[in-house]
Length: 291
Ligand code: ADP
Ligand code: MG
Image (cartoon, rainbow, N blue to C red; front, side, top):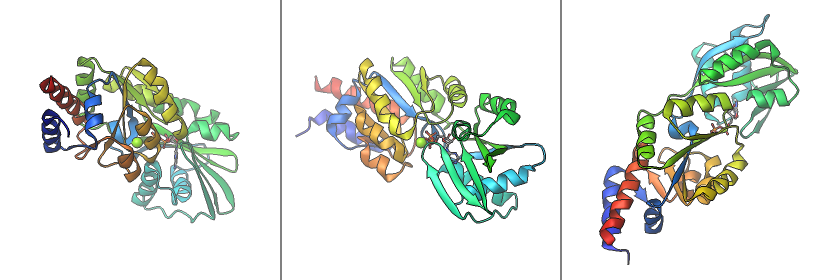
């Protein structure tokens, strides 16, 4: 049976909205030297909104938004949902896509009104042979501001950009500061572009950033981070599940996908990011009592 102090700790944690799956991981958490955080939906609210729209000459911003929404109509990605909502709010009526294909961590391609449409990260769109030069300066400025920018192309030509923003959770900066004060190294892991990721990491005070990480690469990155010592991972998405399992302690946000929650050792039921620190404090106190 579990030592009484651990059982007590679990009760205290539960009162705060922290669910511990196993006593083992809870005990192990006190030894963690480093915590990796997913960005979208973990450090941020996970409800992105379209803030700016840029169009190349001869195209309207409404056309850019409408075409992007047509392509994103079948995608469940939070960015896609934000694009569809922005088009709806603008009173636009996007066409129905004739075909649709999603590339996880990259974007979508679709056939719309007989044209081939690509919507996704600038890296993905440029990698498909589309020249972004016409809007390159705007793109860089928006990313430096911390926006997630997606490019919209039709028949191999750039049409425009959509700049999305997702607010950090209210307690994100404080949580990172408390971990730092406790000597825990904090790392940001995201599929988002480098400029945006660096801006967010700087704003919130994380020690290290790994950007443009594809969904399949997250677990490998955790394995590499573990060379430095025991590592926890905090995430919410389907993509985060393998990394949560690879980490010494996997922590899922309660608002996360079922797959992330199933893969985690600790679940933050109320989405209070500060519980990442508080679970650690409870874990340390529980251990002290046992001695
Ligand atoms: P994160 O790690 O931030 O949750 P993802 O791995 O899901 O992000 O996606 C990484 C990047 O790929 C996004 O920032 C975006 O540029 C692009 N992307 C992925 N899916 C889509 C989509 N449906 N529409 C547009 N862009 C997308
Ligand atoms: Mg996420």
